[in-house]
Image 1 (spheres, one colour):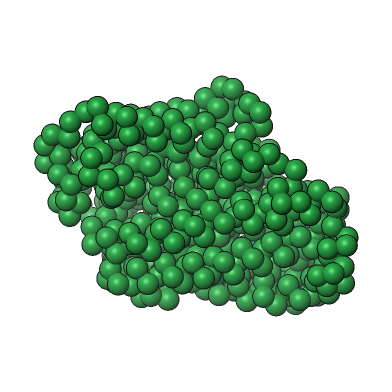
Image 2 (image 1 turned 120 degrees about the vertical axis):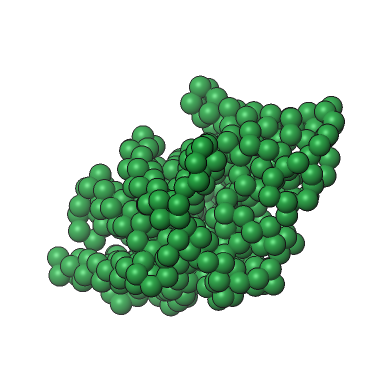
Length: 471
């Protein structure tokens, strides 16, 4: 009981520090919606690198990714989790261009070439996807509270929901970005220190290899290649088209900082993914009968020295919370800027826009909590959310930036087909063959984009993204 109380105190102290950071930036830096959404476009290189990494590595890695590793083994996980690595390489070549455009949201980027219909459809898709991603951050944080205090998951999710909403409402991207940078350092430090202790507990790499179940030693973990591809693609597509990434580029001081930040993100991503695989793999041996979602969290509480476990636990909570605040903030921007502001017949003052942003954050946070109660695991909602975004929007986003022959009809039909196909496969058909919906939705989305664009003429639509609107 005393040990658990120590974990609880450590987590509470860290959460309190994050809350104080939010209050600090709320009073000092957030004066208007530009500060709230893109931190006044002033973030330095180190902060942009940290916030990119922390946004990407949240509950999806610490809980969802660890769950995959625990169930299917380290070699299958290398293929699955490398989606972020491959996506980061491609981001390097487009980050500078995105910073020059100076957007607040991805729908704004689409609108500049394809008009308001593209803006409205993409905004709705992003809201559906990002509320889902926020939801599984609440669930991941609830696992931490359950392990350290015994609080039921439902109550833990409510606590995480309240804290995330507070942090997001208070300081906007300023507080999110700087707490992200701190969390990125903490997670890498905690995992680096924890790995030697975890390996020692299983008698090193040799003992780990001897003790792993045979299925976990195979290259595919018992999954078919289509199933394995179904786990790789959602992560890859999300990184390539993630509105959070694009907003971070827009918040950088200049295009050069935006481009260089992808290098730090790439290196940090490799480090965190590699360390996560090592830690979760040792958990297979040490704790063969735990819930897969808790692979790393259980290791921190029961398999490592107290100080190391506390560090990893705080790092895990840090990434879960900062990822949740990022997606909550991002989706609120879609509603306020892309829906409310664009449909308003009168100009909306900056103070009112800021108030709208904070109100919408509160509403979306509550919706995310409700949605999280309907999915059986973090991994399940993770795949749904990533696919909803990746299959519906990523092809349209990349075509907007890179393909001059893309047309309005092709972009709109691609987004509608991608989103509809995801919902049909996940809900209507209940995931036939146990395949993730990306294997069904992505080909349909891409083919629709290409075929419809080639069959329609791109008249009166500019390809210059620096223009304010499609002409």
